[in-house]
Image (cartoon, rainbow, N blue to C red):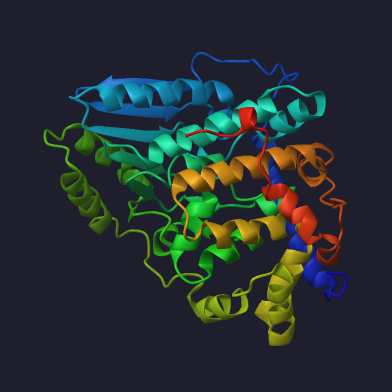
Length: 393
């Protein structure tokens, strides 16, 4: 993407955007000396209240970022509740008022990958197994996605039956900015948002806020944050918590959430452009479409894409296009292969360095241009792992 036009104003906007992302990403990391077996006893709180299970992600100082310790507590508890005939509902929420879950321990994974620690395999594998459990859960699952919800936090919520956004919800899948791809089943839900919205969100990392998370189809309901405590009480008080009845309670609280203005979908003015310009079989085709369009909006998208990892964008587009007709299980198997090849390659480490470690916001991608990311390189990312390392669901 050498020929993307750049101006001081657009460069400044992109730098600011990357800096905002780095503020989020820097919380999503291990905070000590990378003892990969670290497990805090209260990093997630699991409660059984009457016939309901309640999960509280309890790392508010790091925006409730998801680590392997939490995954290994949540997954078996979900299984136990599912096997308990009396359990009628599971609620998952985040501690504090800033985040549901800002993502996974990205920096810990890259630090582990550098030294060959198993965390770089185990984290992704066990996280995706948890995502699959949520996506196939037989009990109504209610995620209260209040605050920042990115990456791993999306995986903990979007595959469940109910996702409740608030005015504080900030949703994004910004992985192409750090040399990764929208994982945790992103390949499954993004192409199912309709049109090319999922492709656009995945390649650009565009952030959705508040009611727009509902309007995009990521959330199922919107409830203003000052009503969440009462909503939870109402859910826990339900005697007959069937899916239909839970939906009625959520809709009741949504209908009462009128203090937050209901405006048009933020991307509504550009939906036609998104569906037309991001409709391509290759990233090069999408870039060409944007260049030919020539509008100010199209130029902004080119500036944004020019900052992303070319390799990440290519594997992301293929991921989403192939996943349109795949089951969640097949998508997660594919994504696990992608994750392990990211750990074996360059850009994931470089993206984390640029945004989290040195924080210079200037990643040096390799290859540096779309043209140099060969079809063979992309094929390698999707290639099977040794049988003993494949994800089995």
